[in-house]
Image (cartoon, rainbow, N blue to C red; front, side):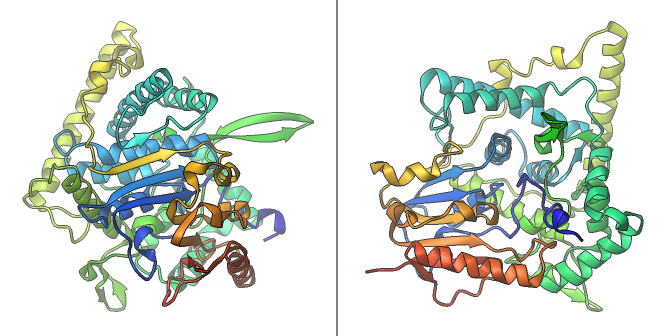
Length: 484
C-alpha cells in the first residue's frame, strides 16, 4: 500500500470512534463525585457520553462539553443523543436499541428507520431554530446555544437535507464500492482475501475475536453492520453522508458521499467488550455470540440506565433476553409481523401518493410543532451536553469560565495534534486525560502505531500530565494531572 493510501481506510470524517465506550469520569485511580465537567474532543459518537452517564451516582451532576471538527458530525451526535433520550413511552427500549444501531452503523437503512430519522431531524430543526431565537437551550439535556450563528444555520441546513434528500441522490452502494476500490487499488479483485486478512490477522489479533467473519465481510462490502430485523436495507442513511471538497482543474468541487471508516468497523464502539461474561462464552474455540449480539446487549443496558435516571424505568419486556440480540420466538414473530404491516402500509401509501401525484415528503408535515412533541424526550436529572464551536479549543484557556474546570478530558486520535501545554489551564486538580490510541487504525504499521503512542506520551507530559497508575487499557492512554 502506497503512502497516499495509508489512512484512506479510516476516512476523513470520524462517524464513530476507534475504540470501545468508556466511562471517562471513572478512568482515573479514584472516581470523583459531585459536580463533574467533561470535555470531549472529536469523540465522533455518543458512546462515551452514554457510558459515563450510566456510571453516575444519583447525587452526581454531569456537564459534558463536546468539540467536533465538522458540523456534519455535530448533527449526527445530536441525532443519536435525541434518539437515546426518547422516552420508553414513545419508543420501547428494544426498538430504540435496534434503530440506534441501524442509524449508527449502516450506510443503508430500512424505510421505517428513515421515517424515524426524518421525524427526529424535524424536531432537531425546531430545537436549533428556537435556540437561535431565544439564545437558551430548548431542552435541558441538549445545548447548542454555545455554537456560532453560522454553525447553527449549518445545522439547520443539514437537518433540512435529512428531511428532504436530493430528488435523485447518488447510490450509496456505488459510493461505498468506489471507496473500497480506491483503498485497495490493484487488490480489489481479491478483496475477499483482504477483508479476511484484516479481520483474522489484525482485528482478531487485537482482541476482537467476537467480530464474526460473515458480518464483518458484509459490512466491508456494503457498509451494513447491523441487520437486526428482516427487511430491505436499501435507503441511504443521510446521517452518514457528508461533503468532501476536491481540487479539480484548479477549482474546488464539493462531492457528497460517504467519507468515513471502511476498514475498522462500527463494532468497535459497543461490540467488542462487555460486563456480561456470558456473552463471551466460546465453543470449539469460537465465540458463541457475535459483535452484533454484544452491541445490542450493551446499548440496551445503557438505555436502561438512561431511563432509570430519567425517572422512567422501563417495564420488563417479557420474552427478551439481554444475552444477545435475540428475543423469544414469540417476540421475533411479532417483530416480523409488524415489519410486514409497516411495509404494506408504506407500499399502499406510495401507490396512493403516486396516483394522486402527491409528494410524500410534503404531506407528512414532519416540521410541525405538533409532530415535534409526539416523541417526548426524557430529562436526565443533573445531566447536560453542550456543543462548542469547532474552533473553540484554543480559546478555552483564555476564558475564565473554563479555568481549571474539567475533571476529565478525552481526545480522539484525529484531534491529538490540537493538544498543547495550555491544556493544564483548563484541567481541574487531579484531572484525567484520556487519549485514543491507534490500535484499531488497521492501515498503520506496528511501527507507526508505537510512534503515535510515544508522541501521545510526549504531548501529555508537555501539558503537565503523567501516566495513570495501574492503567492497562490498550485502546486508550490514560494520564492524570501532575500535582506540584
